[in-house]
Length: 102
Image (tube, rainbow, N blue to C red):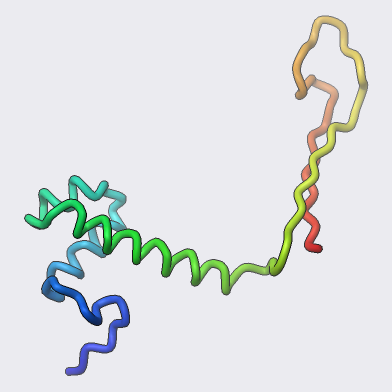
């Protein structure tokens, strides 16, 4: 069986430990907690978690419907003055967001 996992190439830990890191990352544990459970150094775990997060970010960027620069705009519609009410979101105001791809 060939080992063609790109993350695991040049790894200095066993494949079993790497799979444990992936499982515990999926369970949303911190690097310190993972290091204690697997008996690895926290810096080693941090290195692999950073690599995993960067690959997830690259994958999400490729799957994103937006490309290039994205502009966000927000507006409030409704009455300007409401007696006794303060703040941006008053009862009769509607909050709208708009995303533009430029």
